[in-house]
Image (spheres, rainbow, N blue to C red):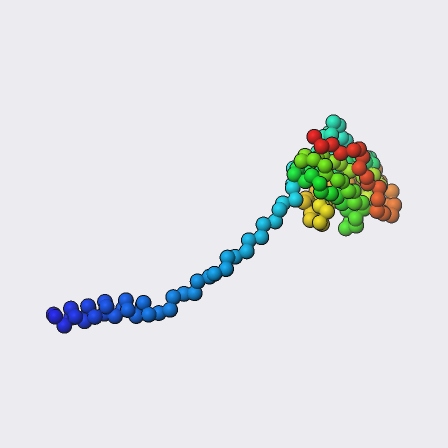
Length: 171
């Protein structure tokens, strides 16, 4: 039994010595870089509407019939003072208008108005884009034929025809 005890004691002594002689794992001396992107602000409300009253949309629509020739796109912007934003109106993959706004306060409400040809039926899209080209939001609406009407042949869509309808508010 004495030999067994010595053998166990010997293993206990040898194993810690072998572990102590192995090289330690390398330590990292550089700290990882963390990239923090400052957020450009946010769009807190983006709606299509048939009218604006007291700097607010009068309704929120997803579909507009072609008995209406005008539509507004309203946005409420927060924490974007000093920036320029764009309402980019698109139809069938073509940019129909870019409407630029200079944001001058911590809360800035702006809208653009688009005149529509009754034959330009289908999905329309408006993107809210900052000056560096980052898309902050995208909204769509459907321009549909009114009941009992036949759309006339489409006039050739061209750029333009959308502009700020009234001075923006900073309330």
